[in-house]
Image (cartoon, rainbow, N blue to C red; front, side, top):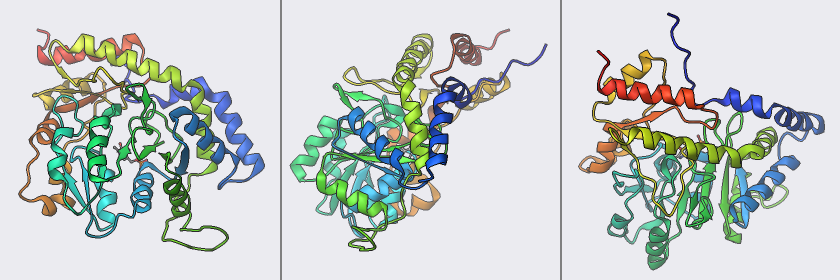
Length: 371
Ligand SMILES: *Cc1c(COP(=O)(O)O)cnc(C)c1O
């Protein structure tokens, strides 16, 4: 018998097939007008994202990582400052804090959502705290109202790391427009991706938006007048054109992701601990992730059936070699537990029912192998 076909973890080819004409036409237009850096598509995309999220300003940047860096710089985060964040995230969240000479102060996550535990944030605030940086992990916003209320009591800004959550909602409002600043990523495999690196900063604060625009281009406030320290952080015109084309199907794709996640929940929750989405918000399921105590057996069984899986993330940041010295004696039990149990399954808007059923069957087989 021929081995079954491999199921893609994220199917960018199927998405391209569905959008080929628009994407090709959009890219060709950039090649024709020749404004490869800061061409008209850059502002066009920013306006579309402002309208989508409801934030007053969008500043596109070179990546999600750059969005975090530029936002922290715009807020004036400097050596000796502290930024409260989660240890259970992609490394860039804490990395940009450290890069500026500041210190990430970790707060443990909730074991059932994997997002920062808002009830533990206040105890982590000190006179040196300069910002709170929650992550909307796997595509679900954190408890933003509670976090914003704590921040307001202490006069702190809140940056939402929304690299995985563009398109999600929280109490009817859009991710990226839930706090002082929202940062997102257009890395190809994110829910809204380009064909390389890209990202965006969203804010309704005029001064922060102006600062971000200047920092994006070497602190230039006009014609080689450098009023602040910046970076080379622009997003290419061609990448903006790709995102503009992908916006045509984005709403449908988000709906599909939510339907697919609901079906996974229904078919898996009897025997696996699926992560919870709180009733007052939606997730765009950048990852569909469950917890399993016997994770390595599960990975091996699925791999043998040509079903790819991934682990987001196998080690919390306080235990990563580059960070461990800073957090030697610290323990974050929920983050550590999740790191040892989480496994992400194939998830994309083009995952059909037959392929999804194959994933689910393989998961159940892994628990109770067929005789
Ligand atoms: C992907 C990601 C980033 C970084 O985005 P890039 O565009 O890859 O630089 C930051 N934070 C989180 C939570 C992410 O998932």
